[in-house]
Image 1 (cartoon, rainbow, N blue to C red):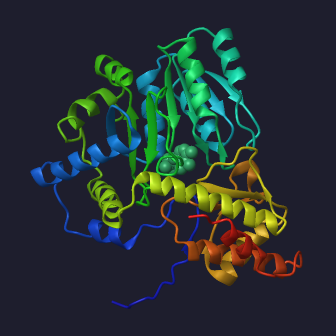
Image 2 (cartoon, helix red, strand yellow):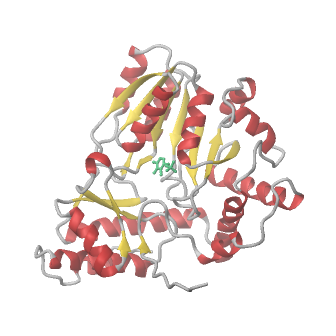
Image 3 (tube, helix red, strand yellow):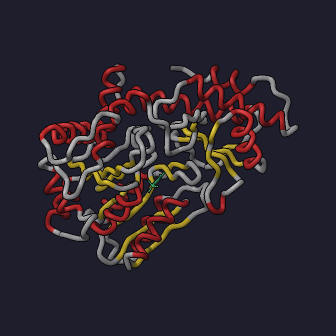
Length: 377
Ligand SMILES: *Cc1c(COP(=O)(O)O)cnc(C)c1O
């Protein structure tokens, strides 16, 4: 067989994120059958660790990308009307799933740099009867914005405790300490802060949510009641995403071995995200969202397309473009997972050098100077 050397680019997109060597090694072990005591033990451990990390009463793992879990939650927690908070591509997706499933969708929609307001949610709840669940992103990855999910979830429960709060935490889990007090379903995905390959979705459930799915059987593949019954016995209704679940357990083991708690990671993430934003602003770049999340830094620039291209061709760094209406208008740099400082420093240097290449600004290492000045680790 002809051998081929591939030089992998430095992957700096907000999903998928790079998988560390430790996790890749764990997933490279010989295949385990999913209906065996060996696998069930790994499944049980991963479940326990997720439960502790998400602080939810029950945990489900599904073999699908994150969108599958979004659909599964709408199937499980609504039969006719949903309220969708849309400040970007992923909020738009909840609306689209609702419509595809023939639900009536009440939508609060905003520009992709603008979060929703609690008052609008209150008004929507008052003017539309029959809303069964509200769907929102904790971090909306389209523009890297943070939604006021705690305040929104609280107002929903105060209005009517029977309305289910479905929170897409795909780019918030593993980045920030999520307050789950008023959340019924918290959705996660393997390819973001867990640093795993895509293909595994997780859902944390409140007691109220698990009671509901146990007494209302809906859907076939995405039947959360059927999954809950199986997963409480550490097995799955259909073939489990075995290798990714093994990788997930390795993620928890890796943190243990390094002596990191999730709080350490949240602290680290906040620090590097704030320092990155300051560094980008110091070289004249503008942060896109009005309320930025810490899972990524998003810059709005008329040179976005050129900067992305220079990073790729001159420095072999892959960052993310905007999607749909934001294509070529923004670029997104990942902070999820445990990003080494020297890698982020290299990316900031490359961006500053790209500005020089484009004739916008003379390079003087200001981005790195400000970045390191703001790291109080
Ligand atoms: C990545 C992502 C998803 C899930 O997308 P998939 O491609 O289905 O995994 C959902 N919501 C947000 C906010 C995301 O960032």
